[in-house]
View (cartoon, rainbow, N blue to C red):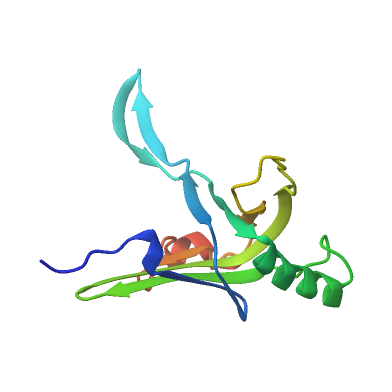
Length: 149
């Protein structure tokens, strides 16, 4: 049996910052839908798109983000980053790119005085670039979607 991909196999890069995350997500919202005539589906129409996600990082990796924020002037002045999620094992490989990710802190502290768990911070991001998302090198959006942007 060949080894399959798992969360342990992913390397995540935020611009030129290599991060170890406790958890990461990226979701695409595509509001394309069926067109209806007199309440009956008859083709489809394009809809708007959005992509967003979050990363959960420990204090060591938050320090890397803090250094970038210090260089930018503040957390709110962090530049938009291109993100790469990449994993490869045996015959399986997955590469997801998200472009122009704009970050904000969602959960800075969640303190449990009993201990037993690492300190974790959660950062949300939204994809802001018309390059949007690529999955294994294939763009999610068509050329027509981004023409003139």
